[in-house]
Image (cartoon, rainbow, N blue to C red; front, side, top):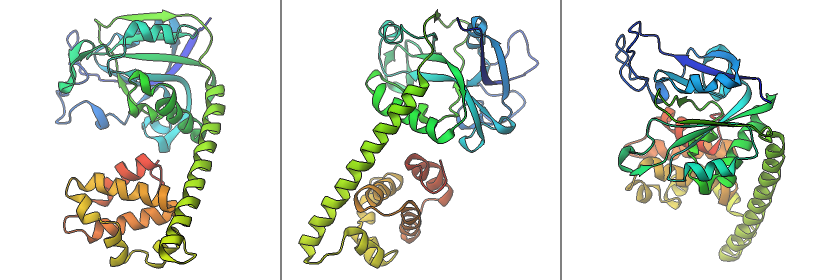
Length: 313
């Protein structure tokens, strides 16, 4: 049976007991809202009995993460280790069905603060978190990033998982004193097996991508009457008005610059076959040529991070 669990948490100390503000309220000593991306610093590593984990989630003024990080700074660049996985489900999948899905594993499931509420106009739904302690401490960041991506994109996508769970240092609000919770005793979640499956999945994706590149190159060569590939053409016309016009960024940007840049980056990376560094350079160039460019740091934190290129991941 599980005895202890290690994780990171942030305690909002207001000095206003017994009625502290909930973590999603405004901190009384700050003009910063206590939620979302603002909650990245000053996390503490904590080890407690697994049987007491429900006390942690039945709080309205804490944020937790399964990751341990350097200096308590909750970013993937500072990732150190993980011995607990937190999964967030809020797209309408039934709580009882999820309990059945995880019945073989040791878990703690608890409802979130938006359980059975109309969240952001998305309607009333069952919303909850699944906390899965792991048998071992895992430290390989790249393996874990791939495993979480695989879990979100392949294993639990149909179950309404929040795609942000791909982030190893994802923080989650605790459920509050009224949250429902349930423990289950079983085997440890098989993270090592998941990592192996993720590697095989990624290898298949790479092979499929290679085949697509070869097919696109053959089609391009036929249409141009030459033996050049798409990548050859883009490299010959790299970061020029000709490349800019060919990608039709102005046309795409009408419906949103970020979305247009993401489409361009994905195309250059997956269909053309340019390298990560080339795609980064091209996207920054294309953005700079627009009359109303997006800030580079915004591109790095959104597009490059989502595609895991440019060192942003």
